[in-house]
Image (cartoon, rainbow, N blue to C red; front, side, top):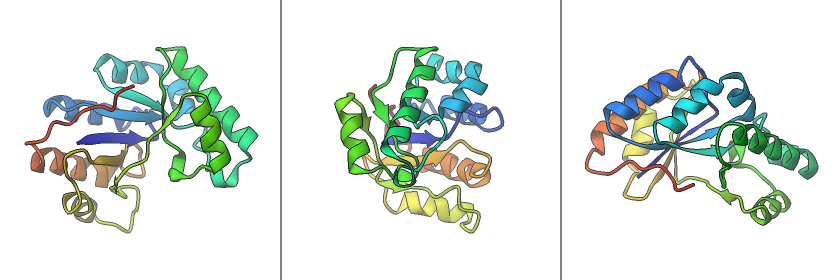
Length: 181
C-alpha cells in the first residue's frame, strides 16, 4: 500500500505527518509544491532524511487544463530545479487536481517524468466531508498496492489526521512503502 501526500511541505502539518509515519514505521511519498519547498527547505530536507520519496507537484499548484502547456511545463521545471537544490532529481510527478492535458503528459514523459495518479482519493480537503467519511472512502476500497492520496495542508488537516491514523491502524498488516524514485 502506498501513502502519498500532496501540496506540502508546510510547518503547521507536515511535521505531524512525519511523526505519525515514524510511529507506525511507515514510509510515504510527498508530492511537493516548489514554492513550499523554497519557503520551508528544512522541512523538505527532513522528509528526505527520514527516508520518504518525493515527487514534483509543480511550483505553484497549477491546473493543467486551465494553463497553457508552455506555462505549465515551465512551472514543472521550476519545481524540478527547486528540488535539485536540495537533493537529486525525482522522476515522480503528480499533476495538481489530477489534471494535465495529453500534450503536457507527453512532454513530461519525454522528460522521463513518471505521472503518478491514485486509486483512492481521501478527499480530506473537502470541508463538507466528515473525517469518518474520509476514512470510509479508504476503508472500503483499499487493498495491497493501493495508492492513497492525503494532503499535508491546513485545509485538509482535521480530516487527514483522523483518516491517516485510522488507515495506519486498520491496515497494519500491510507494509506502507514509498514509491520508488
